[in-house]
Length: 149
Image 1 (cartoon, helix red, strand yellow):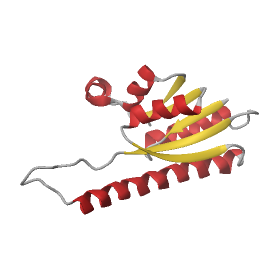
Image 2 (cartoon, helix red, strand yellow):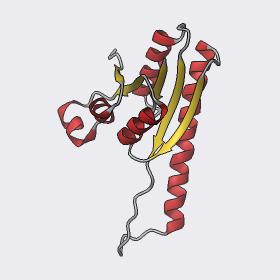
Image 3 (cartoon, helix red, strand yellow):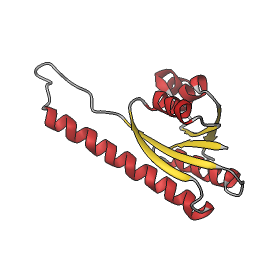
Image 4 (cartoon, one colour):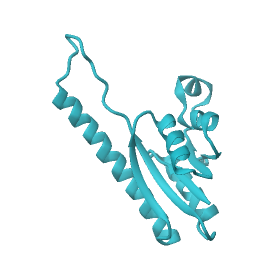
């Protein structure tokens, strides 16, 4: 079974990581890929809002480095609990929901696991990553909600 785990480093993604570990850690033949998505800095091309290309490049590189750190942290947590069998991580650039779906298609994932921020109607209206993944995924999706304490 190929599991694609998407994380953004939030407490909601941490809940998804813990659920992934509890459900799939002891199963044979499970391969996990952790992905974290960064968005490139927007281009503001007209005066007076123009920003130098170097500044935008620096913002994008910082976002990419943060996504790399998040993905590595998640992969390390899984490896510590499950062993190093078949756990990889990757950083992808673009819109999160679209890139998760594209990677699941490309990698031929059997399951995508994502956390839910639980924003309700207005949050979904403005663009929920988990909702976008559920509606466009080529495979099953497990959306994990963080327990409210």
